[in-house]
Image (cartoon, rainbow, N blue to C red; front, side):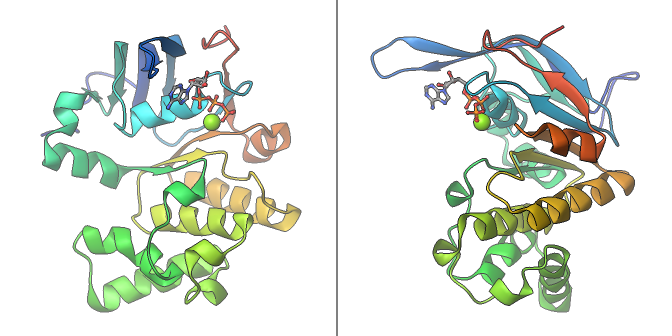
Length: 237
Ligand SMILES: Nc1ncnc2c1ncn2[C@@H]1O[C@H](COP(=O)(O)OP(=O)(O)OP(=O)(O)O)[C@@H](O)[C@H]1O
Ligand SMILES: [Mg+2]
């Protein structure tokens, strides 16, 4: 396990001629990514944009190692993310510590009895405990203005509240790269401002963001570099 052997000047995240198709139940396949190449440098904020179904969420799944490309490579810090590498628990753990994915649907991510437990889960998995863990949870709840939700059951929260909790759960693990799938979807105006403010501060602190969004004003508020995909599942040149 290395994840720290980046060759030359390669960017932190590299999609290199990536192809991916989902296998449907009837044996057919649906293409999600076709010859997709783009990169994200350390400290950059990149917005992956494009129409519904063009492949944005799929690209993020490949970066998190949840699926493997059929063609080409997804590399993080110089190493290809493959099913074989992800089978090595040490590699998978290290990748997930460095790259945090906030899913498009927060319900797929929330499973603990309380919001507090939810936000503590990741750091605890990484071996944190005691006052350090309490401090991390309190800081993260405050960062998203969700201290008042700490003892609530995640499944009783509103859509927007769930989205902020899901983001807090990933941020509590202090990833280097925050990968957010439509982070401002279903949020009111103030919450959109809070989340974009947080993402800007995250990047200003030297960290890296890759997000997807359908909101052009979010891209400009973040000053993000846009990578646009189209219905043919390709990056628009
Ligand atoms: N589990 C799956 N099984 C089969 N096909 C899938 C699956 N998930 C996604 N797809 C298909 O792959 C393509 C890309 O889907 P993806 O979710 O990556 O798009 P997206 O760009 O994130 O869209 P949206 O803007 O609606 O979130 C779509 O055609 C979709 O129907
Ligand atoms: Mg999507």
